[in-house]
Length: 46
Image (tube, rainbow, N blue to C red):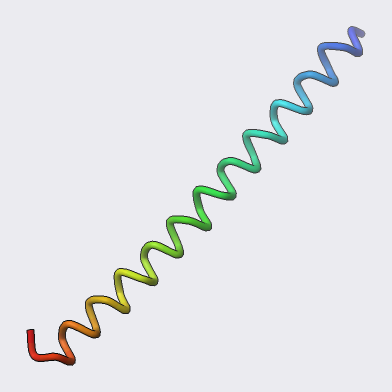
């Protein structure tokens, strides 16, 4: 077993997981803000 490769792979997977999680969070924020903006425009009669 090559411990160096195992450690490297584990750290890389963790970084990928964090990026995907951040992307999902940002996508959720974007969708929420878009929906709020759409509702404001509708409320103004636009």
